[in-house]
Length: 236
Ligand code: HPA
Image 1 (cartoon, protein in one colour):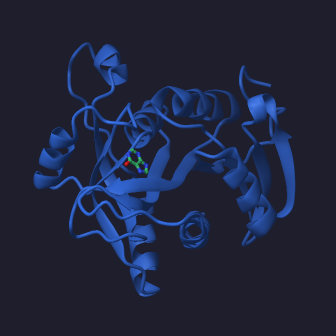
Image 2 (cartoon, rainbow, N blue to C red; image 1 turned 30 degrees about the horizontal axis):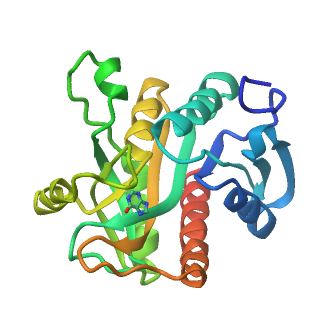
């Protein structure tokens, strides 16, 4: 096992879906994967491997925020040879082009996190999605009538912002939405020469103050999980 993932070598597939919530990882495994086996319960950050559309797929919870995601993404690539990572999560909308339940495919993610400032000694690195994954997901989403948007997002450290006016300004500069993990996912995928994509659904709108109910989040999570699974299996 690695430091934070209790899997033996070979137990994790080359392609991994990454929900923040470990119970979502279990739900995806139980709902969509055949012969799913749980390979890690360390810290209750559940991970499963099974089969979807004939392809071996794993699902690993990451927790919230850059530091937590970085631990799991790093170990998946460095210790288990993972090559394709797709985050499935929720986001707050900054743009009036988005509605509650819209799907966002993040092309890049700005950040206020200090992690990459340390990594690049103050230089501003622009991490990016894998273009083939992004194109596949967008084509699938639009061909099935989803309200999908491709664009830049921002990944912040603090969910409860002290600077809502700064988020508003980012929206004015074309940033579609806000999450807490994508900047680090794309950075680490680049470091390890792997492919990554973030697929998000809008759970709350920072302009209108609208929020989804728990029931709606459940329903939109289904759509997003299916899009992510279809995207990675089409690219196999
Ligand atoms: N901020 C940061 N992350 C989020 C939000 C938000 O408003 N909504 C869902 N994930």
